Image (tube, rainbow, N blue to C red; front, top):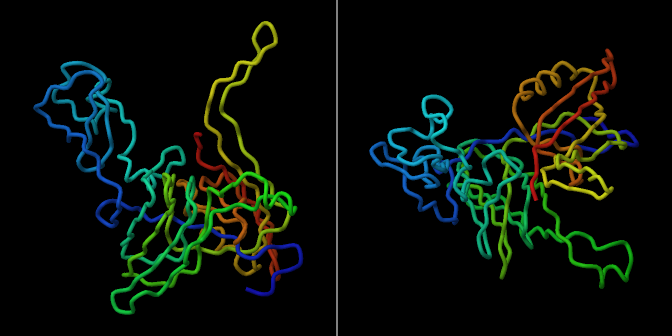
Length: 314
């Protein structure tokens, strides 16, 4: 791509997530010890079981619950089981920002998708640092991010550097992994002496579309309920929130048809949208809600994108 014009960032694109299951990854978080559902067993109300294939946990909704397959709870087994999410070790791969995988000191996961991974995005992180290493069977170690600190700057003053409370980022993008198809990518989420946590890891091949104009809009939508009582006092019901982002992206004029085709292909699924490389605030995991282009024959085309993030619970 040509030189970035003044007022534009470099590197707007997205990461389409690769699906990870116990078949193509190894993690140091223990598997659930819940019993696998059995057709001949009678379950009491409130008992939890796990589906052996999907690793989704279900809660029985009635006594004498026999022969009702949890995976069919939306059809013939309606009213028998309630799905309450996947087991903990898989929660950071469940396309949700409202569930977490946790472990004392260190979460280490080895990803073996048999596909190219160039970028890894992490959300809902509680850790002191994150490290990503890529190892190829033939070439050995081909990438090492080393420890990337999650420490957030404590203000723009000398006093703030020493006395402001310690704050840590919860999102991180690690880019530039070499394009190996058979390598093992190791992600280490480190929190020595405390609980390491991760809400979601998204790994895949990044697709770069253009450059974002430097007046993006970011914000969040609140889904908790806030209302006043008869005496004017506030009543607050807790709820989730979700980030949103609006971008104006500069695309090479000859690429407008290709850009549209790449975006349309992911209109029905959540992916990681990167507004600008190196700017954490401009990274959102969610759905494309609007896309518009101003076409030109030569030169530069403008694209307007509206992205709504997945719901986040705190």
